[in-house]
Length: 273
Image (cartoon, rainbow, N blue to C red; front, side):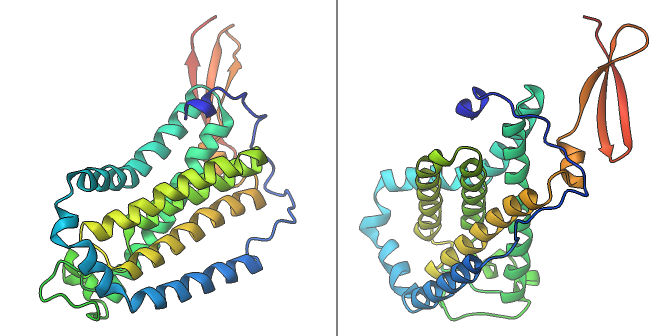
């Protein structure tokens, strides 16, 4: 955040809704990502019990440093990612840094999209969590996640989904602005997201396949949100959250105009200079 705050603000980002874009929302890379996630999840599915037993080994669980690391990365992902993205948006608006505000807004969009998708899947699939006894990685129940409580909402991992959604959105957005930074932000963010997934397995909350699918869904959500906004500059959502200006009024002072919807704004008197 500190690095972004020090960068110069971009020109006003809102553009006409009629802007035509050649950016394709879906590409062949999406198919490759989906295929890779499905294949990895199927392979991990065979090893779910093995990884669960290894990570719950008494010697592994007795490591205090691992416990602390798991706690840090878990809370950084959720609720940390939500707090960070919201803060970036608010700070960006206050200091008039369009890049920072956009990054916070699009990160929040990716998190909400991923959270909704993950929540629906958790309810529909109703997979039993590893800590439930007797332990059974094969225990699924259609719609069980909606009424059976949190112990049947293992698939997919929500923390992994949030961490990868934030990582994908931020790395994709910054790579578009500053291409040379893709090898800085990407590895750091995705390493942190991966540690989040492992921490959920270490805490005995998820199976390995839960984490892999959560990572895939989060990555997809982050990439699609950024790509959609690039393909639709000046959308209603961006006009709602990324607009606002201070303009002179007839009394010699200034008014703060904040657009709620296209064509509708609230004016608030500002101080005289």
